[in-house]
Length: 476
Image 1 (tube, rainbow, N blue to C red):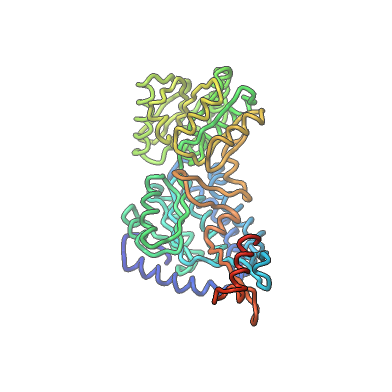
Image 2 (cartoon, rainbow, N blue to C red):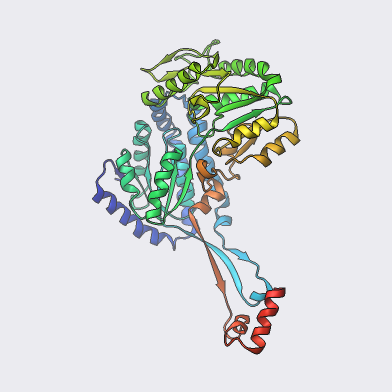
């Protein structure tokens, strides 16, 4: 059984020690064995497709189709991409040498880091657990997974799947609350992959520093959308509505707020309202019976969002779209706001829910100042047909990832790195970049026996050697 369900420090330590032994064995395992493991995992997950969507439904009331495309499909894509490219990623990279290293041969070898800890979030609990795991296994490591206690049905399902497929000295799940995560972070893991809030990311990084453990942190932030007057408003409205209200807005790269050219604001507001209802409603309205609209994860987050919304309204925001909310079922109708004060909490905090503030602008300088006045976001979106406009935004702002005339899709692209910058994250994931995060890039230099150029640089430093070193400083 590869699951620990409470803070049993001795059991966790025993599990960690078992994985240390296995990780050492994996260092001499061939790439073919890694691929064999991944090749078997894909059909296993497909076989359990209904089991996965059922667990996610119990936590979010999410439709099975949305679960397929947002939870299972990205993981299968990671597996297939790794299988297609793992030989290339793992192959030692030959390194050219300058003339001063004449006679040597050099390469970079990619070795597994060892025992890894994956702390998964609650918003996409399956995807953001198994996605990093694929990179971890492709790089030849073992893993202990800590799923989120806020999605108990999915956490239990993940624990069961892992127990059925993996030996516990290779991959194991430790369920539990904050005290469990705190205990895990005291162990000397070789790498920690954490997805969650910037506040908790600081805690993880501080704990990792005690053991000098490397980390990948996928965090969050207020991801802006800029819509200029040249944008195709129909396309922009459709894509922004999808990106914002997917998973009830509980997506780390969801559009957090919109900056819209004031000359097209009225048209855009009407378009995004219509597209939101069209995408997530049924018979012209969004209600608790709408099959394509998910729920807030729990009452604590329901209350948090309600307070954010009330604060915005008290500070003068105008409601453009709203509807019923039900605390008993964690249902919140999509909310679109205009005339939002910069002092409102919805413009100060990451929203992480179905509330979309729309702010007008008159110049690109206002846009850049607004974005640069906040912490660096995990994502930034630009809707424009003017290359000069997009180029200036890209040059004068910073973000973990960017989508131009599209939302969310940069996360799913297998050849693109994904990650944040500063408060929105540290390190990259997905595809080759995920493989590198879980690997040590080990430089190896090979020197021939007998006389070599470095002998000319050995002491005593007199006469010819002094002249040679002066020559080297000047020309080499």
